Image 1 (tube, rainbow, N blue to C red):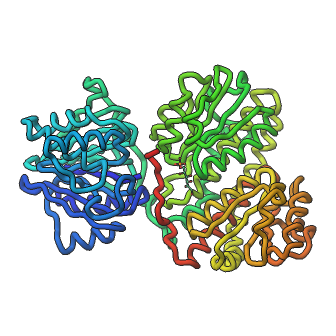
Image 2 (image 1 turned 90 degrees about the vertical axis):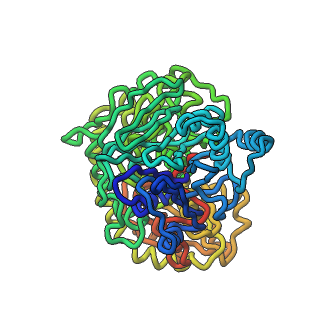
Image 3 (image 1 turned 30 degrees about the vertical axis):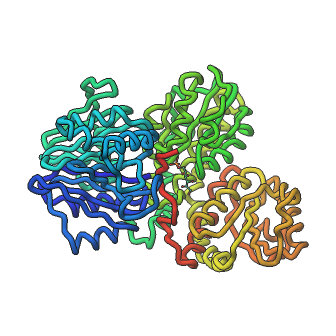
Length: 605
Ligand code: F6R
């Protein structure tokens, strides 16, 4: 949510910052801006909308300078306008910000009383105006920034740049991620390592409360108490190839297509070399766990809901799922015999991170299931399990979802074994079945032309319903989420059995009802629910395997899926869910990788 980058460089930085912002655009794309210091003079350019507009603006009005900060915005306070775009400037300071300054109204009133006006509606401008106030009182640049930071409440990652200072940048992290990059005679700040990938692979992740003063010679980090802090420099492995489209039209298409390889590699990582046993961390121990809670937002929450079936059936472990934004404000009853799992692609989602912090001290074990291994959730959990999907750039989550499912399934097998529900031979049999998963995913991907045809029928509607039973119920909800976020078609995912308790009133001959029904133990029940729709002239699209389609009888539309073992169906049926949404979005001409109003990493509440 909002992307930040800062460079003290040896070359003209505006084009380099623009390039880095392109890699951060997934975090927000309402407006963007850059400020630089050139021969001591602070200046800035800002533009509404996507980065391309800022890029055009810079062609007409170049911004020289070898020191600069940049920002791509996802609006929280103040509409997306040029005036509200970052960097915000007040006198000699310019500021870029990711997060929310919760006490900005009080500070703004205080500054107004001192005769200092604001021109925007943002919380961020208050940071700039307050720093200006401190500069006007005679503090040096870093001291002024520190004095401002001491007054701020809320969540923020901030970068400050000062008029007259070609070799100085100040950064701060509290609740929103910020990384320091180390170059040769250059230093960087970025919301994540991805932003800095072509510039450096040497990264220091700031801890909560850290402040950093950067010059071209290095970074001086102090902790929340103002003490000098030694944070390690880590080498991250992210090359340019991992963050381009590799010949696909969209990142989403690339990421959907990567799933067989991602799942194959993750299986290799989390299993023994001969693939007959699990190789999960020792401290992930379910022996004394009597209750499990799975917490996440959005797509991660649907992965959790699928996994609940697995923890119950494979491990006999009581399991509940929760939405992080609710969990963090409840009074969950947790204790030493409980485990909570926090699932997050980014590992930075504000609500999921807050949910972890809410119970971490009271719970037996906290587990982070994350895609970004250096993320806050990974670092703050007792056990961090990487899902190893690789960078996911498209705002809509696809490969991270199936990679989350895989790690959760392996965890359920471990829970089964630790609790004596499964023996080694049974686990080995499940792992053998899992080895077929990449091939099954490829077979599902081969259905793309047929799925694209079905998507044409979805593209023209205003509403759609997805139905499923058992693990296919959360998958129906995930399919509906994908369709609404990508194509702006209103869609709902329902448990098939719930249909007659209300939603059946919606059925008419115009609204597609997509039924996700592999021929599993619940197939006959789902088909009965589908018949209720057909009896009311409903527009059914049945997604099943050959045997299922034959047994179900004639339906207006169908998709033949490969036969899959029950346990693997949620992975394989995720493919048509994703591709239906992708092709419906293509047909409607919406922005596939950056749908309106969304941002990938939701680091504000
Ligand atoms: C939907 C989607 C979102 C995320 C949610 C949580 O396609 O991507 O619903 O799943 O914002 O994000 P993470 O997993 O980063 O915590």
